[in-house]
Image 1 (tube, helix red, strand yellow):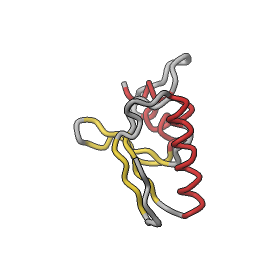
Image 2: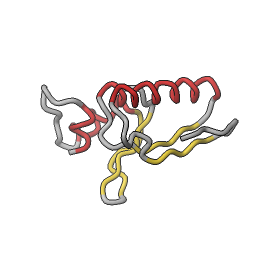
Image 3: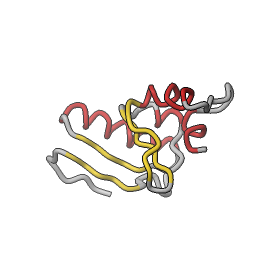
Image 4: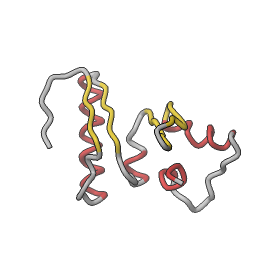
Length: 100
């Protein structure tokens, strides 16, 4: 994978294939820093991100069968689903709950 820039937006599809969670965290942390410093938008798809990696995102879009279930600030996703009647169990991490 290679980023070529400068660009106003980057689109990345499933960049975590074949990577362990520690490496994925470091890559997303770098991309987060880059997005904030360069005032760039980054859109990426991730399959089963760790809780630590999920926490790095400012906003999330959750899709199911091609339809948007939630779009907005990452930290408000749980509140939204709780309003819809879906409460995250105490011992479950947020990304796993949202994937279910």
